[in-house]
Length: 381
Ligand code: AMP
Image 1 (tube, rainbow, N blue to C red):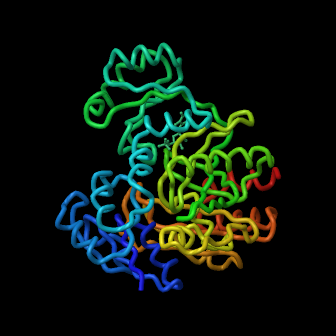
Image 2: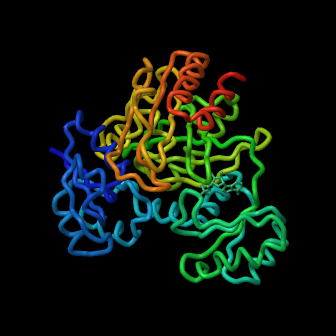
């Protein structure tokens, strides 16, 4: 009997536990709060990620450790490696936690990135804005997510406001300035690498964000074969250089047919939720297969799929459940502004059928604006 320890008890851990049950896996979840939603399906240890007593108890009850949350302190992950296997490894976690280290690695691997510069002072910000040009974006190097900890500089006159908003973070978590990419599309590659180095990727996904938070994902993204191959080569190069084990996502901007890397997520990813019903093997199951040393499953798609995120509060389920290819995921969380509380996946045999189903769901749930960009992408072919 293998027990997988998961640091972080959110919806990703919850979906991992659900995916691991048929494999006979047991789980133990570590989270700072007792009502973390994965706790509805797995026993928990409640405590701080840096508390050595908590970590020691956690380690003593598991066979392998993994993450649902990338901001677990890398030192805690390192400490755990002396006691149990930890996947992905702490170096991969540390690189992915730091936008500067991440972009530097992308560049070393020949993965195109927007121009960027490390910022520690207001003078450096001023000089970097002059160098990179406007528009550009200041981001915190660490602990930013879903568009938080970012400030867009449209003209040099915005530098004061940007420093007022984020300057205090420079000493705490560091800042990075990036050129603004006027992309036509956002894509992601979700991929998995096994303990023996086997590598697989799901078809490319196109993503739409609202206020920095993922709103909808469509798979497969319509791209040329060459673009898909390039994206997969980037993901493979990244996984191999980090000796990565498990699932990860590489987020890409597509501008005039060129892919630029934005960031990697060292974990199962929101843009891969469609794989639960839309693929032969879900990202959650393949992550567990990878970290427990089982053979990886096939990542081929079953039809075409769209995932819609529910943010803040759950809509009524009936409009989705009525659809032949409609699947509902309620994370069992309390409603709260900006919080990811659930998602739906719609699956269909063809893009035309998926567009029709999405349009019906948009009307039934009064989410026309959320489905509209996906429907038009599907209809334009
Ligand atoms: P991130 O937290 O880096 O994933 O950024 C959240 C969202 O902000 C992205 O999904 C993009 O929509 C947008 N964004 C981030 N960085 C850039 C950039 N350099 N150029 C244009 N848009 C960006």
